[in-house]
Every structure is written in C-alpha cells, then in structure tokens.
Image (cartoon, rainbow, N blue to C red):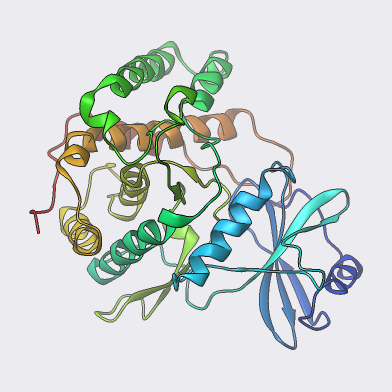
Length: 338
C-alpha cells in the first residue's frame, strides 16, 4: 500500500478524541496496497487500523462501512468499523474522510495451502449469504464501465500487442451480458445500468490473500481469522466474487495456472455452504476471465500511471496477463451437485 496522507501523532491524538477507545499509545504506517492510506493505531483498549480514504467520497462511504458492519453483525469474521462518540462511521482529517476499524488477529500469508483455501471458501460463502439482506446498493466502481473507460488511457503506454489483447477481451466480455444463463445470475456481472433493476448483492470484489489474515498458517488447523479492506466492494454476482478470490488464492505465481488441489478444496468448501447452480456453471469461465482482466487493467494503469505517494510499490501487471491467458482455455473444475 501507499501513504498518500501523512498522519502525525498529534493528528492521531486529535482523531481519538472523537472515539471512546482510549488515548494513542502507538502509530505506524502500513506499507501495502495502493488505494488508501492506512496506519496501525494502538490504544490501551486495543489494536486498530486507521484508514484515510483518498478517492472514496462521503456519499460513497456509507455503503462500504455499513457493509462491513452488517457482515460483522451476522457473525462473519471481518474488520468492523468503530463508530465515533456521536455515532458516525467516519469523520474528516486534513479534509479527507477516515474511519477506524478493529485490527484482526492472525498473520499475512502469501502461500495458501489446502486448509487455508478450504477455510476461505467457507467464509466467502457465509459472507455471500449474509449479504442477502444488506439494504444499500453501490455499483462496482471497477466493473465493466471502468474497464471501458480505462483501457483507452493505456493506449500510449502499452504495446500494440497488449492493447489489441485488452480490446479483444473486452469485446468478448461485452457480448456475455446477453446470454440467458447470465441473465439468470443473482445479480448483474458487470453492473451495467440496464441490469441494475435485477436483485443485487454486495461483494468484496478484491479478496486477495493480502486482504485476509490466517491463524495456524501452514498446518492442517489453518483458518482465516478475518477479512478486511472492503473498499473495492460493489453489488456483483457472488460468482464474480468467487472468481476474483480463486484467481488469487489458488494460483501458481510463475505460470498463472490454477493449483488444482487448492482450487478443489476452495470450491468444494464454498459449494458445501452455498450450493452453486447450473446457470453459474455456464458463466464460470466468463467470470474468471472478467476477474482476470479487471486486475490486469488496474495493474497496468497503476504501473504506467502511478500516483505520487510514499511506500508506493505497484504490482507486476504481467501476472494477470498470464492468468487471463490461462483462463481463456484451461480445463475448469466445478464441484459435484449436492
């Protein structure tokens, strides 16, 4: 992540005056991610994460923060925002909105085994079920419309070959919204306005390994202790959210191919909690490809057109190029019907 807004100890002490979690004992910037500014913040009453929102607006924030609060209230293991003494979910510092959430226990793990993937599969399905009665709607701000707007901005920085691959894949994905199986999905895959009247469900949409913490990592007792960083969430089909997650958790980094063992563990665990449907099976490859190009585009943009920030380290965009290439033709695992 990056630090776009510097927060001093004096700033943090002033922020904490608006909460009932005690005075500041320590403050440390977090060096991971690329979108918001985050600090570890400790008080005598616990360990917290302070997030300064660099792009999200006050009108957009209630969706994200109330979604986390909703999931936590349903018993899902997610970072839950702390309300101010006045009952607000966010306030302002240096003219930017911020929030404080509880800091989850566990460790940041980059190599996920069968136990880790099985645990995440169960939790993701539980989160989807819990989101059914969440009342707010937010378009996925990194959905098809954003892809269509962003790809032309890359024309002057990527090769002709890469640009052709991007536009060709976008053209394919644009055709998928007319398929009967697509129309029967729980919500619209790409959040186009013509489909927003359909039933919708909020999803994380960015549940990479670095947005979850693990207890007992590397053992048969490994378990996801919590999920955080919901600030790319949006109303999308559960299938798309599943595709985003397995594209990261169950992948071979060198090739972009699926690890068949961890993928089966993840998918079977998810399916045991929320059984997947025949219509979802018909759209599985499309969602995997959509999930791959979404992150290829964003990584290309962040790599070639970075914002100024301290601790900023853009991700390698070629990784999701390899992932997308594989998802176009690879054999796909699908759980047996329950």
